[in-house]
Length: 323
Image (tube, rainbow, N blue to C red; front, side):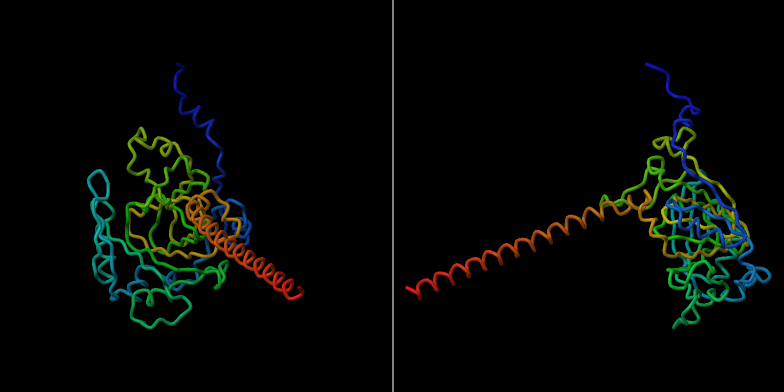
């Protein structure tokens, strides 16, 4: 038997994924990336300067706006090896969450808040809620129309990893305080990322994290060798993550970030990840549609047979009358 291929040979034989990152200072070049068949990530600078949260210190502005608001924080615990061992929801004030997150970066413990559904355009019934008090601090990106915007969220605190996943919507991720490290993988890298299954064997949009892999890759050797874009997002920077692009986000120290999910370009539905996610759903719809058509055809055949019988009966009746 021949010797196994070297890492260099494997790298040379691997498919060449387009992992280009566009650096921009305005939204003009974004539209070509948005409409690209596979989507193209964009890092944008200088477009958050007019946000109220950026006028001075973002941490101070957040505390002034919503520090006393009650939130459901995530308390994450990790082993010495860095593996998450538990998580719990803790009711506390936003000020307490930030204090704990600043005091204990993601070592053996981390505090994190997923504040979903910021009401950018509607006056909420509960004006005292954290989301309603944080929402006035940010602005919708001008490249995203009000009609296309699906959801705005705040991500506050620290967390070791988001794990590798992809979203079915386009995404602008914006950093107001601190920084995040982001790894981006092309939608066609499915074989390298070992996508996971739900308990009922349905595909889902999540994979494993590189963070916990042994040097050899263990049971997931292709993941260790998978090419990816690595970048650090800092204060005032935004990242466009196209729908279907795998990504893993690391927040080792306290950060305040926002994301804007919006409707992707119609071409996105043909990206490998989106097709993968909906494959079983598509198959189920095909089966259901087949059953529906079969039922309709059966009813049509029965109606046609009934009509033919009626015609024959009518003909017999007419013949009998003539005789």
